[in-house]
Image (tube, rainbow, N blue to C red; front, side):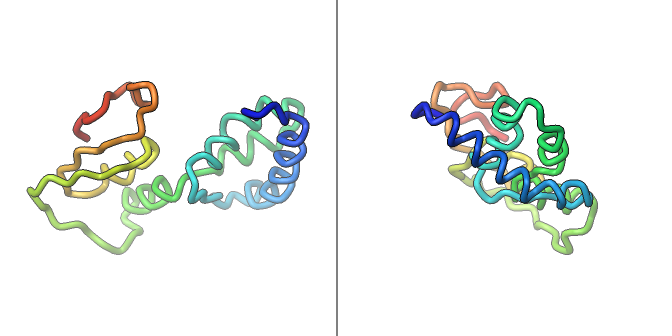
Length: 129
């Protein structure tokens, strides 16, 4: 999209939605390892494929791997527990990593990727989570 290849992006989005839609319709989580791929599905695909109702179903089932693990932990299905640790930890993370960080017992100061100084959650560089 950033290079003006809208038709190519639309074609690839339609292919991705076509592959993922049966899984979404079956109620399976669609887990993304790369946050930018997840973001494309839950944000960009609506604009690229405004007439395709499958986009909403796919986006509803889309989660980052961090969100998926955090949800498992919240439901007690992860099968592991974290021991408290008072040492500060500096972690370079994407802002979508915060749900996973919040499931740990670590005192985390995240050095998040803030291109414009503000994160998705309205935080600023070096904010403690």
